[in-house]
Length: 198
Image 1 (cartoon, helix red, strand yellow):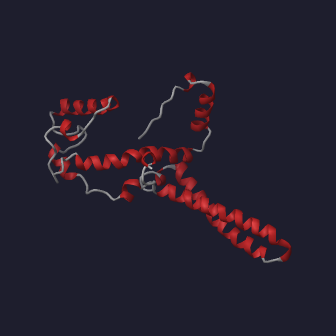
Image 2: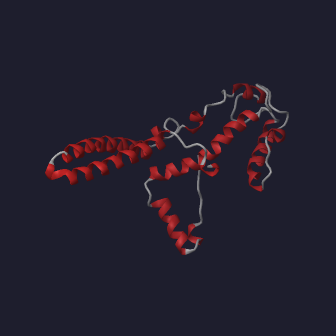
Image 3: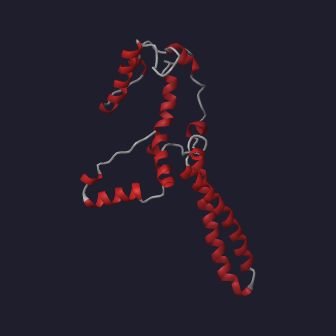
């Protein structure tokens, strides 16, 4: 889950207008595609961290959370506070929402996921999101329509009097199929390497 908070009213005018447009006037599915990039930047590291959290051992956790994670920045303060809170109220036995103790949680962790599993978007979000699943259906419908239009354009180009118009229709339709293919792929899986590491 993510929540993005900006005090837009306090921003200078050009930036205020840009952010207002970016977060309120864009289609929701387009905003979600942008948000996926941000979340996936961290998901790759969080997944790997979940496995190194065990200090390299298959089932045993390192003796203390401060030895398992490195939190050098002030921005990590909330993460450290959360770990301290869990430690304080569970006597080191694990997360309060888990029926398992710390050792059992470590043993219950799934095997390391593949890159495709970590970056997967369709099962984890798109099929459950009305905006994104609707957009994906429209993208696929447009793709099929554009493919048909390419064929019609090329057939029309074979006719002497419609050559230019047919080629223009075929070219525009072909470009539309490429755009639809890219958007379809973005709805199914994230990009690698993450944008900040590209």
